[in-house]
Length: 223
Image (cartoon, rainbow, N blue to C red; front, side, top):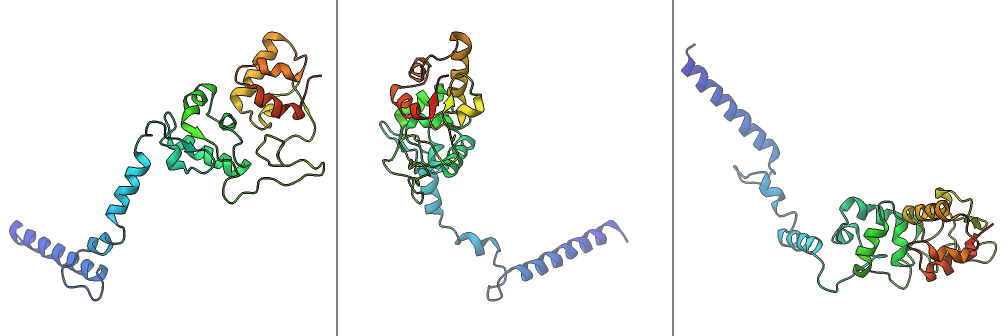
């Protein structure tokens, strides 16, 4: 068989196969020749998709803030220096450990250091109540709340005061409001200045406000 008849035969074969596939994929009531793509074109509203994409990708306006306890990962991704990976970790931490009591407690999330926290401080706010669907806390055996927003111990927190002078990084990170950066700052202060004489000395460590020290005082001791 010469080249020309073989080429014609191959083209006819492809045409028959393509037509058969189209008949199998199109709806029974669809007119012949209707493309499969037209079946799904209307399943999602393009205008709604464009509006959603514009909403979650637009930069923050002057003075605009995002609520740390209710924002989705997509909304947190709009913050400067926060990518989707970190935004998802923030949401996961909030789901696992409860709402943030203050913007400063964002430091408990891995990947959030003091520098990033300072950059985000004016861009974030914290709702007055717990995140939707989560209780504000339940009372433990000693009558204290196990998950309140005021920084008291959580259900996963320590059962006895943590010694500032012997606690490991892991022990410190278990405390509310102390993430990796603050835990490392405590260890560095201890190495450079010796043991803490009192819990109040924690206020000398970079990143610890007096308000945070007051919230942590019932959970700490300096032996």
